[in-house]
Image (cartoon, rainbow, N blue to C red; front, side, top):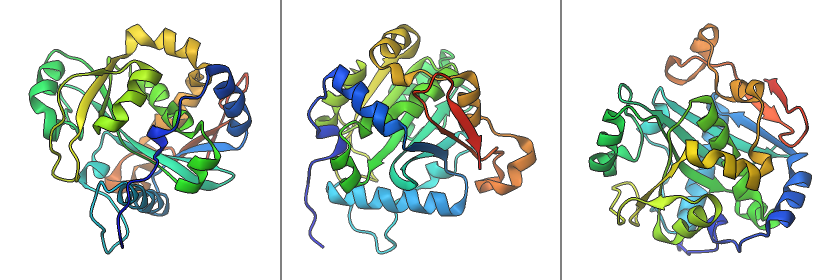
Length: 263
């Protein structure tokens, strides 16, 4: 199979704010976010990752047709899938890092930058493996923003000090334009990827109010955040590696009272 670098979710033209809200208002009525705890949900995300990363020339083909690593199994990892009309449209992975639990994928490459921040007691939310279905991303220009909504929910739920991304240079403009992420260092090589990645950070406490004002669909209820990220000991045996889970999913984020549900 030949590898082409094609238009990605990050390279889509900027969408005017009012137009974006209108488009997402319609799209959100068809969206469900699910924390991927079952083997079937996780496998679907791993396969979507492989397709997306291969399409952009970021990895070599894998005969298994999946792209996963040990960071997916970390106790502080959350895999979230976005479904449109029941079809997996996009996904991302979240890690919540603290001084006592420093596991975050970016630490493998940027430990010299992250260790002092963790030692200072900062809570860092890292999100990686942001992928989207090619067909659905072309149909829905607001899909990147909708996919990143769980990051805002997680930052509030875990009281994050920083929202961290490690992305290729060509994707940095999206995070700067959309969220005001700041570049922390020049790109470095990641042994899992074919292209260098750079580290970017957003100070969440100082930017949260502005982001909620600019993107009203990022707002959420306490119950909604708990449904997506709270893990209960009673269901630990059902989760990967014995992690506790409540099998949460949420829908209708733009309604006056978001409608959480469990599956």
